Amino acid sequence: MRIKKGDQVLIISGKDRKKRGKVLKVFPTDFKVIIEGINIRKKAAKPKSGGQKGQIVQKPAPIDVSDVKLLCPKCGKAARTGYRLAEGKKYRICKKCKQEI
Image (cartoon, rainbow, N blue to C red):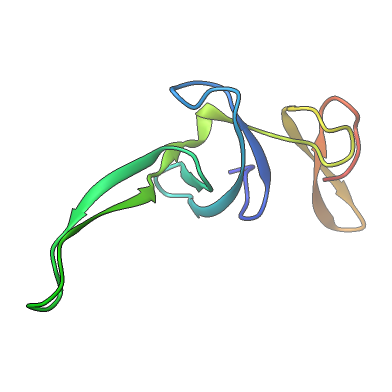
């Protein structure tokens, strides 16, 4: 997977299209990511003890990695990513500006 935790991404499809956010968590086996403030779902939570009331909790749900595009920190555009080998290390590169991410 070419998206990692902490990356800035652009949503390219779905109800949150054209929104930007930071990746909070990555699920590589399912090819899904959780993005801050995107794909918010509401869930009813039961009261924990007798005196409390139940409440509705909002939390971000996973979104498929094919629906997001990485934002290049150098050129600021949403671009595809590639890899480059240098000094025995593998680096991600932006396909538009050819700079290291």
